[in-house]
Amino acid sequence: MLGTWALRAHLIEARLAGTIATTREQSLRRYRLFAARDPRVLLGLDPERDWSYGDVLRLMGQKCGISDDPAHTSGLDVIDPDRTVAGLDAFAERLAVAAGRRVPVLLGTGHPHRLLEFYAALADALSSAGCPVLTPAHGHRVDIATRFGVRTRVLAYVRGVALMREPGVRGAPAEGGVHTHSPLPVRTALGAAATSAGPLPGLVIGDHGWVCGAGQLGIEAIGLADTDDPALFVGEAEGRLSAVVPLDDAARSVDYRPLTHYVLNRANLSG
Image (tube, rainbow, N blue to C red; front, side, top):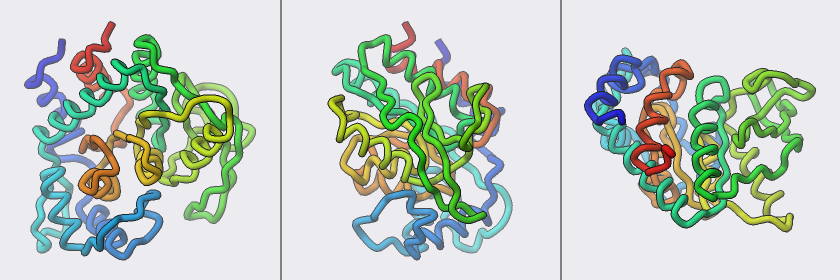
């Protein structure tokens, strides 16, 4: 079993925590947009209170360990690896509870090229523990606003994990998978689940709009988030999300494998 210190060392070496690739400028820009309630960074969350730029910066300092000094405006962000480990522990605890109760789960990612393998391993383990892994609205088309205008995407499931694809693309799991922050895919999936004879998820696992959109609708949600995604941490602070893990969410897929082993072992789901 991968121990805490070995995990911590890996987080720093792979730059999932410690000094990460996300720039300070990018994070601060998104904090300002969040304070202005720009829907591009709310990710489906409707905050209960007014969050000023300073409020968001201080929260991100508490949750991630980044500098909360507003005069620090350039360079690379730094995540406290101990906060990442604590987040993974909380994440694993929620997985263990879900597995113990055999609740239906829904998994989805806006980072299919980076995080699909991580979530797919969770889906396999939860399914083996008796949790129904739901796949509602498979094949449904969703119109999503992008920087290039509104584009039609297709909701697909690969190894039990939802992702968005370009219409007409088939083949390897990550082929055609597109990056998205939108909450529309999870709303589409949950809407389809609600109108079918099947169950609703008792837990949603993922990132970006997948977890913020679910948490906003009152469904328990847990996920991963980078320092430029304040919505997830605000959602956790306001009680809409149960656990959020601060880390770089755009590293190589292989770099998340030790996290997978750690989380499954902590949740007693390693088989």
